[in-house]
Amino acid sequence: MSDGQIRWISGPVLRAGTSDVFHMQEAIAVGPHSLPGEIIQLGTEELVAQVYEDTTGLKPGDAVVGTGRPLSVNLGPGLLGHIFDGLLRPLHASSGSFIRPGAPRPSTQRFTFEPAVRSGDPVSGGASLGTIRTTPAQQVLVPPGVSGTVSAVATGGEYTDSEPICSVRRADGSSAQLTLAHTWPVRRPRPLAERLPATGPMITGQRVLDTLFPVARGGRAALPGGFGTGKTVLQEALAKWSDADIIVYVGCGERGNEMAEVLDELPKLEDPRNGRPLTERTVIIANTSNMPVAAREASIYTAITVAEYFRDQGLHVALMADSTSRWAEALREVSARLGELPGEAGYPAYLSSRLAEFYERAGRVRTLGGAEGSVTIIGAVSPPAGDFSEPVTMNTRRCVRTFWALDRERAQARFYPAIHPLQSYSADVDALAHWWQTQGNPDWVANRRSVLELLETQVRLERMARIVGKDALPAPQQVTLLCAELVSDAVLRQSSFSEVDRYCSPKRQMAILGVVMRFVNLARAAVDRGVPPERIASLPTRQMLQRVGEEYGEQRIADIRQLWQQLEHEFEALGRS
Image 1 (tube, rainbow, N blue to C red):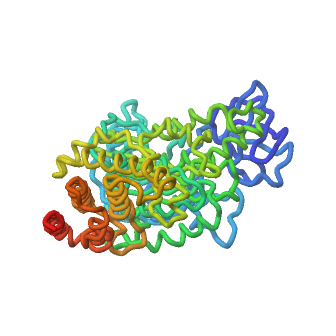
Image 2: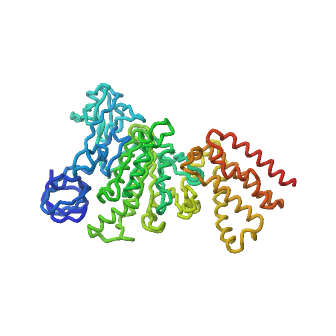
Image 3: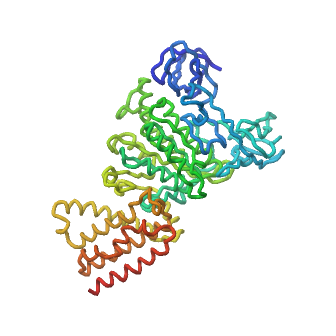
């Protein structure tokens, strides 16, 4: 191990003098309590490091000890269902109200292991040694970089994640002792066999997202919005209803009361797949705004490393980051203490590359073990005053393919989800069109385009109506506004607190969209025949369609088709009268 002594310290940043050999991004132990840290700059006789715990009490002359390895986390079966700090140390294992600085937090939990290999079997990095009985079942992976022949394997039974369960003899004759868990550097992407193209969406259960702005499985989405626009509620809905196998939720620099609400509400959520607590397939990484700022910077990398670990087991993972703006603020604070030349709004010049580094670790892949897995990243952004031109939002836009813009005015009008349909977009639409067609929805692309054109026309007509009045508009334009309002109520509005409409399957989404667009087409044809807009607005089916999501749940999808017949009869009656 290498040694040094603190010369200067400011907040989480310190400078230490040393004549030993250290390495960039090497993990260190600082001071009498062995506080964890990481080297971020190196000189000939001086190093600069950031410390991941409160540095109160540290002073010049205190020891800095190198560990000889990069900042790493322990990945194993004990992750699911628990809460961790930004360095993946379990918060549930603490005793009392406070955690002693630098204290190790080992897990004593035991897991039921069922071996899948025998002595003499060849194994390599990413191969499965066996399974762990959890919900969902987990694989025990051979760490990347380890290969050879199994010389011994434990029998089925209960083990802690630090007990040896397999011995592998390498080609050079050395032996590797494997446990249920292994460590991995958080800043190094886990290896994979092949990156796969997007072929299908990650279903979120939210109509405005799946129908208009879908995110591909293994894709990257940004969720920007000002305070009170519903970012956290929407991410909780995505965590519960998305078709991901594993949810990794990282509260990065959020206010303590908001994080407390998440920690209180998530355990109460029921998994719609099996009726059990949703937390059984969730990993929560909590790093509130009053925690050390350097640990906030590391928490994002910790979260994506955990997501990649489950991806390598052949699982589909959704990573919810709330929010990357607080992470960027941590970069800015550390950069300022280092005296680096600031960029726009004081953020460091490398902000864009760090964001890209994070988002590029998403993807749908072929794992080293031959399975298919994916990591889908949904990063919330908190732009000051809802300004989407600020640096974090603008640089995030360059990294993602799906942009879900939350609008303050819609939120204040209690329109949820408050997704602005004209500021949002998805670059995965063309890649996902084939998937929707194979699900029996050949008109998805055309209907989606029609909805967006209708909403864009609505904005232009509403500006005119504010000047001349809605009644002064020509009849076709009045009907356009009428139809746009119907689309907003029936398709875009969806309450996360509704027992019936909080989740909408792709089949029900397409049924609702189809009948609404049929109303739009019939209304336009009727007004061309001279039917007054007031009579179209008074049709019983229009009022029914406004609440179609609430009235027709997943068990009544077939009944939505009956609305088509009722529509036809009512519009035929309009033509005869």
